[in-house]
Length: 419
Image (tube, rainbow, N blue to C red; front, side):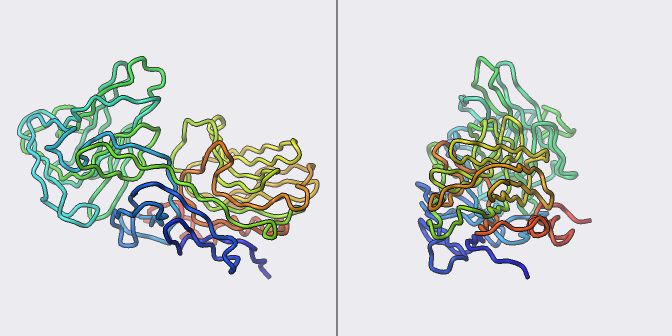
């Protein structure tokens, strides 16, 4: 008989400031949620939707532009959209050369008639007029729907680290440093990213061309696409859309903490299981994915220095650190198991590491489950589920719990297209 967790989060019910857990039923396992200000998500209809301050974001996955599967809890770092008018291509922050931008031409990814037509009248480009300054990396993104132009080229102009990225809207391919995401109704989010930590001059401009060949920087008169929601942000990957209307806007970081109490957790043995998705390989050395305990720490986290999903236990000042060898990106089911004299780590149905030694926390020490907060950082990504068991499960049980039940389930979790 399959054993049941004592604490379980399957993101479904929430209110401002709170994410409700399925177990335990008395509410002790509920999480406190915080984010100052608005943010956007993909709702159950596949549309970009703005939610209010302190409202958790249940973000729905999309495969080939169609919502597929249950939502996950989306947690992101603080980011600022540096474009003052993100959806007004004639407004502040944009400079059009040999181009006509006509507003409100088609339905945008937010479901309203507010997307613009970008029509080339010469060989110029759509340029971001502001000179954007960055720390160690940038992400430029824009939503595009094909008109009569198959190709889009985006160029960043920096001192020594300029890049040119071609996109093909027919084959949905992008050159190095580029990414295409399907938002449905023939809308695609095009993004480019670049690490510029070694560049002395960390400022630059961005250009968008509509050429007749892949990767060309010469637009052709008469070519057009529809566009929505431009964004320039400081970071190693593009985050959710941050609308602006006359000035830069900052989306604050999110926290989700405070689940459980001393009666929820068993200090002598247990299992922490998480199904999570890491959006990109961050340049941050490490940040936790999930952590519980005060006085003792048991955590699953992404480690940038080894580019891996890693596991850490720290009890009485003695640490055990495990690294996996799998690609940390994408959706993964992971578990950390502890009992006296043994710590084990499982990922996607496989035993990754085992330490046949180590003490467990003292009685009454473990009393809190946080999604990410250990005093030094937070988890940023998607959380599809969290489970805690107050007993150590067998290897067979752990292999089963962290495995996919079918090929279709795995494909949906990884957002693969089945052909």
